[in-house]
Amino acid sequence: MADTLDKSFVTAVGLIDGASGRAVVTGMGKSGHIARKISSTLSSTGTPSLYVHPGEASHGDLGMISHDDVVIALSNSGETPELNDVINYCRRFNVPLVAITGRVDSSLAENADCTLLLPAVTEACPMGLAPTTSTTAMLALGDALSIALLDRRGFTAEDFQILHPGGQLGQNLLRVQDLMHGATELPLVGSDATVGNAILIMTQRGFGCAGVINSNGLLTGIITDGDLRRHMSDTLLQLTCEHIMTADPKTIRAQALASEALGLMNANQITSLFVADERKPAGILHIHDCLRAGIA
Image (cartoon, rainbow, N blue to C red; front, top):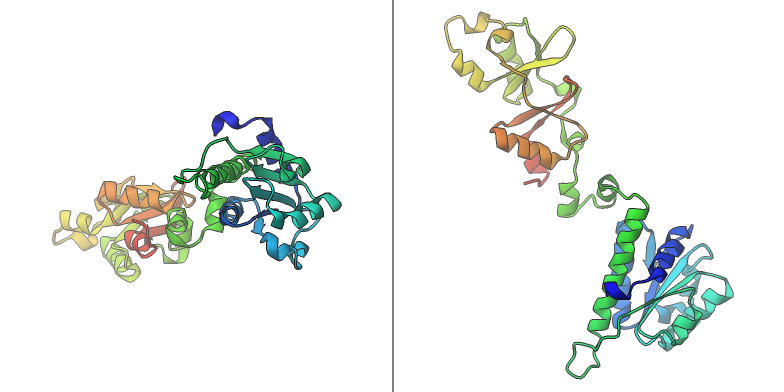
């Protein structure tokens, strides 16, 4: 497949990227199923797309194709009769047409603005009839187009998450800022506050810890249940937080992936992370927040 790609592939990417409308993908039979998948992949990676059934196109669905669109037509033979009206429509209204076909001398290729030629290989079917190898090659070409367009348009993981809010993909791309508790819920005490006050804050907020901040509001330490147990004495409640805190606690950026935060908590055997920018606390994330979101 890679050996058959030439400058036509670059031309096809340019035509699709240059269209101000959508990428309309069409095909009949098994090619139609591949066309639907290609359209779905294009849409989910930053290139708005839709599938048009060529049979329905002849009965009104040509209206789904605008002059600002680009059409990608799939046919191994290049002679699928149901595509004729789509081809004629594209030529009549100057809609760019990209062909994915196995025959350069076919009607589809001859009328296309750009032709992506499938490699000359036999079908995997013992009779050499059932579309198998050809449809696999079409799918590979469609995926290649999608990824090339993704790269050309600078499509990022953040963009991907916006289009994939559901399922495991969406969960894996959640940011800390999507799950964290905000400033109003922060369990914070001053470094000169007593441990007794810290325990009250820990109890009220329910995160099992309290962040210790200095006079500039910067996070300098953390008090956990473990710190309390390690300093257990008759005078514990009267001690200052600075005296028993663990200095320089682990923090995470709000823009970091939630999966990164979960990994940091697991690696350090902790259950909460303060979200901070240059030690200025902006939120807190508990391990249960990650687990509730399905991040594991």
